[in-house]
Length: 153
Image (cartoon, rainbow, N blue to C red; front, side, top):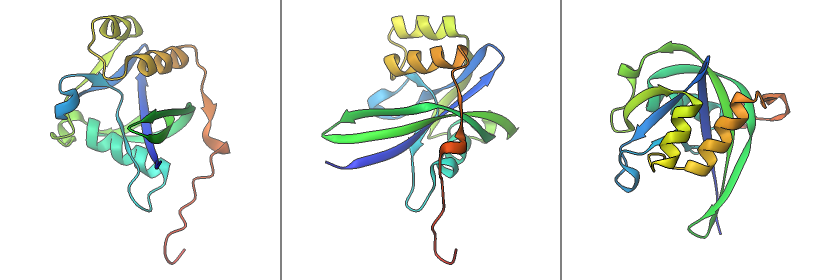
């Protein structure tokens, strides 16, 4: 069993959350938060910033965390910190088109309706994360030791 580490990035604006529409063949057209995996020698904070840019076009600053999401899939263990982030620049026109076909803002009610109609890639985790976000159940990232032990440091 391998352990894969990813990141989930939640970008909120008042009462709306940013979702991307997937282009991957196995989930084409489904909506989800910007998500991705860490590259070799990349910290989770750096991966979150990179994935947000690739999938949404926005430059972001990681602000808090909603926790750690873990799940088993294909005989592998996967985990991903769920980060909240603020937009600091960029625009959806700057995203990598092969990463997402659309970037849109949704309210919690709209996300709940999308889950009920099968439009979400990960309905259970998306609803759980959105619920925590709107209840302000966020935590400081200060407890995460995200240290780059790269060459020459």
